[in-house]
Image (cartoon, rainbow, N blue to C red; front, side, top):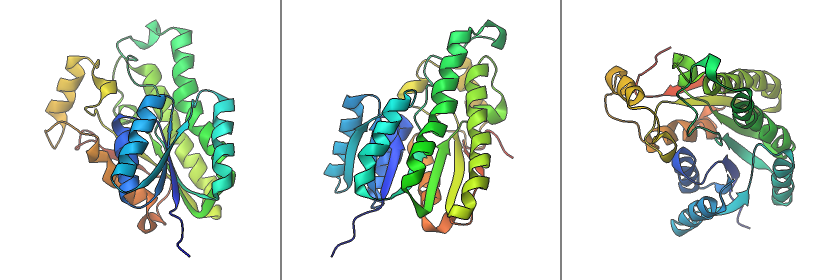
Length: 247
């Protein structure tokens, strides 16, 4: 009897970094659940994985809506255990430009609801399905490590993801589940098209590797953290940004 592939859930897997990570997971032999708010993007990514010979399906998900997250968990329950969760979905486009004291309460709360509460909520509801060993990879941002100006609410939300990663790692280590974060730099994707030119220039001038960052630059680190060889690595933050930040 042929063993079914292990399942990996990629939130926000419809485009950009999420699409690149979902495609890599499919190429690595996982059964990929592309959990995405935008149905068109999610179905397109799942179809691309299938066309490449992998196994994938689209699942609707709004990480800001607890009922949507619960529905995702219920949808996955009949399939058995989930090996990996890539907490990638976030609100990133159109969020910069204002000084911290000019950000309104609604914008602050929206970023925190999606970017900080969302990953916690997804992990909370998928935890009963997680296998042992299991893998959770939270996607943070190097902006939280560098402290980019005029981006305070986004940085605070991604800083919360880093802190959450460490807390989850402590709690889930005895369960055989590792929890790590990957912090990408400014990557050439749809969500960064409206990033101010001066911020692009800042990265271009201060990377150790001077070329622009592409989505595929991130997938190797995520693939490693999902794999067997990372089984004794937990609670860590890996910055993948061409050496823009070093710690």
